[in-house]
Image 1: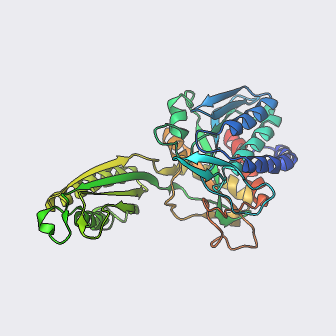
Image 2: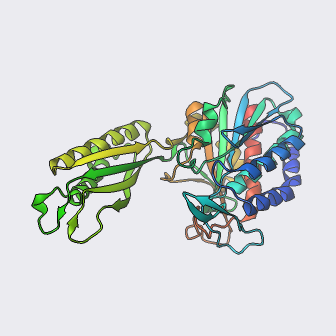
Length: 414
């Protein structure tokens, strides 16, 4: 429950309502003109101009295209942070909207459509609205608020750094906030609903590649060579026992999945080598490190037993996204008051990953999901985030503004 005066609560509702039309206007503009990771130039300019119009001192070019500003409250108190991600995906939109994206770009050497298929347009518009509301009420703020508009949450282009990790590396938290909050729209919840859980929420994500080297020979005489295809199949099966037999399944779930296997060109030629790529997902940082070691050890020894050689490379991706238990318990009443207690859902663990995790490793964090599937539709069957059919019910967005604004005032007031 709010601990500040009822009159301030009414003021918060009023300023949030006043920015409602702008919220939709901003979101539609951003949706129509999406930009890929580390290329959010127009998006950053759009955001920066809005923040400057509010009288804020704006820092641009953080981690390439990031935009940062601080709202100084009229009363003394701690610093907290709010984060929105800005980048879009190489997806061709298939939703029939008057503001549908027609943008194209080059991604990994290919011409692609570009779409806000994950809802980052909504995240940016919501934080722009929250900024306006907080500035209108800054005399009532018992502390300061750091606004983070982050590029490249979907991952920096190959060979580049980006996202939350680079923002932190460049000194974003030189003055460390006491807490950091973020949200993500999801089609798996209906408009009006909020989803979250205390502790681990989203998985870590680590990509791996395994090159298995053998010796080429005729398919009719496999004994004259070393078959990397058979060795690869043995590696695939052996590494599946890591999750099922080698780590404590009662502690946290884990996933090792292979997404591609490439080797050979002809039915009767055993090739020299096979390349495989996959992903590791875990919900515990220690287990994450252990599984990486086990994957490498298992692949190398399994290949060796077949007379082949395995070279394992693991790209260290996003850590586990953890909602600080104390912070989550403290702020849960705020979300329940914003959405209604029955509309705050304790979600299952989510095997997707988020680079909000980097902020939450530095300071207590809380990340929640905002439903955007129309209330009369089944959220379980709605096109998911990253789908070309991903659709946002804009009636769900004001709740995001309300939740974040009230989280700020409730946290600082407590």
